[in-house]
Image 1: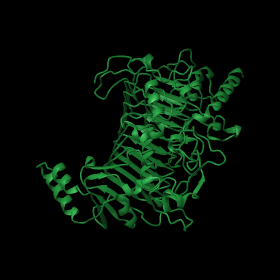
Image 2: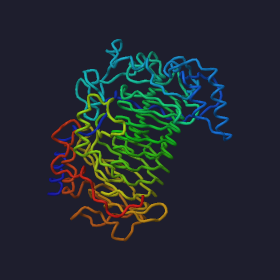
Image 3: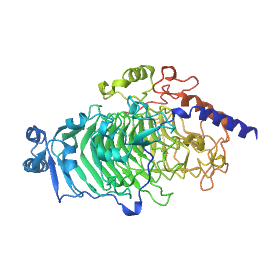
Image 4: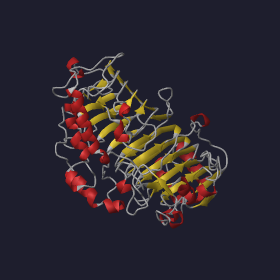
Length: 562
């Protein structure tokens, strides 16, 4: 009984800091009917609109001047397309497009000046806001700057779908709004299956807002949207974002310097992230939030061959359900992978049924929480567009030097991954009470951190077999039912032990039965977590909360081979 009382007391302390858990200012959203959608297939024929810049011809000749057959073919194709160019701005082409069109973008830098000139909020749409899960973006100031402050309170608002449809140039450089707001079904009616692609190499087409727009490309109920072959850089929130979209595909794209998210999907289904490079995001390079509700029967979003590096978080997603992440690399971030049930208002909580399989998670030791960097971030918060694009300003607190963190998830599989050179530890697993997500039902107090399987991973080894140690191993709060560890390969048998001093149990429960407790068993272990939740990116007094060591640079456990 004493353990339970102490645990509840500490959970109460956690709730006192719930306001610093992350959330982004979005309208209350719904999941599309996955049976009506599918992952798009790229098309090489069909109606097309061509976009170019004044210097596209010179760029084609200069950038594609190689003599190989592939380069010659690519150059000739681009010169042919140049004759069909009728648009200087991508959003102009989007507004002229119909369903099943392709928008072909020739080499150039696309700043979308007509969209930049439109304010947010736009006066004609100032009344098109609705209740949100985050703060009020219409109340003045930068909505994104406040986005990490969680909690839906009376009066919180976000742009409605009608806002996206009526004022597509206001919050984003490029908006694809597919639903006719007069049709109550909330499904795509026009501009569906739109394909937007660069016509050369992905580095030859750059789309940037220089930090002046919330989103660079925003697909809202844009079922079937397919994006490929370009670079996006420096949004004031998300570089690429799809919302309430049934069927999407991101392919062969570079994302750099998003204030928060590089690639983000939310309340969307039938999606594919592939061959992406994401870097310098203040939150996550890859974020499939509020993922498909498959309850372990299906994985509605697949992520493969992505390279996410030099972000605060390589990957995350509150309520990231039904996500399969494989054959990817998450490295040189502050933390590699995160899944959670922290933030209020995100549909699909508690989180369940994610699979991380066959990935490399290594060298996640970048510390963006130094006092010098946080001072810089606060000083430039009001004019983030003036920041150095390579300076990462974190908006969510994480333990620097960590491979993964599962905070309040169920039925997740962490299998056959390589974890090495993470200086703090391999990973965390702990419960999150329902009150964190705004649910007061006492029956749900311990409804998270069950049936997670951590099996067959390679810990402290690189793929070539070279030993490259992590600073510690698995941190587990000792609670939950059917959590299990099995077949993980370590440098020695003792390395499989849980690494929190004086913790219980001393070893990790094996599969298939796993753990058999329903509540956290070791409240002392919350001592590491509670102080860290006081961190606030905007508060000078909490750059390093007392008692929190998450932001201290962990000691390198051994020599690293570079």
